[in-house]
Image (cartoon, rainbow, N blue to C red; front, side, top):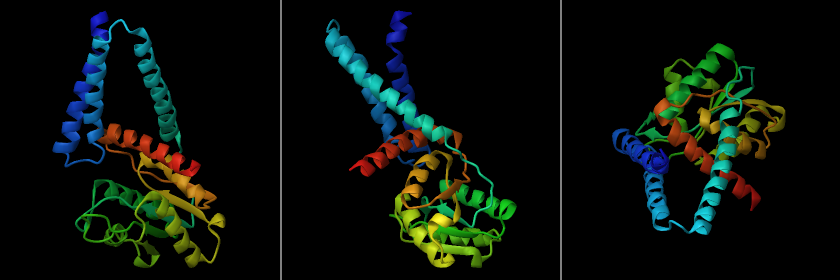
Length: 252
């Protein structure tokens, strides 16, 4: 039994390698997939390193302390990400749909999911609000994310006059900053006095709220799309590092 417990890092390593193969090769190179290849390798190194330094308790203790601190921090941040409110149906003055990958001229899987939720909110819960589609043109994209979003929404019956296009942003922080300018120009009000609902994917909500508040949004809520179940490990793990980055940049 003790030997089986010692081999837990090896078992997790094998699972990490398999998940990497699935997300990178089978699912067309999902972003951040390589983390699980690296994780699997580190776990293997950890397992064999502990065998090599058997008897050196001080080194083992130091390594375990470092790992424990990381796991505590990881768990705390993931709790914040998972527990943040993700579906508010109260009426807002504007929706912001946060951009994601476009394949050629068509919304990718993540972006299409967000647009479906935007359509649901704009037709079922609030058929008078304006919709800001926010996202610039990334590498490999033939049109901007905003343009792809606008075309999709119009194809689903959303009135073109309700749509405001913000096509310069390249990250979440810019999504909120540049959309703020569009909303304030359209409404002639300060963003602090405007109710806004952001549409994104569930894992992205907590970090989005940080950027929104820094940009001056006082009444911000979210209406999110659930992550594809197979992508939950990679998306939520990547988001952990993105949240740490967001806090680090704010502290500098």
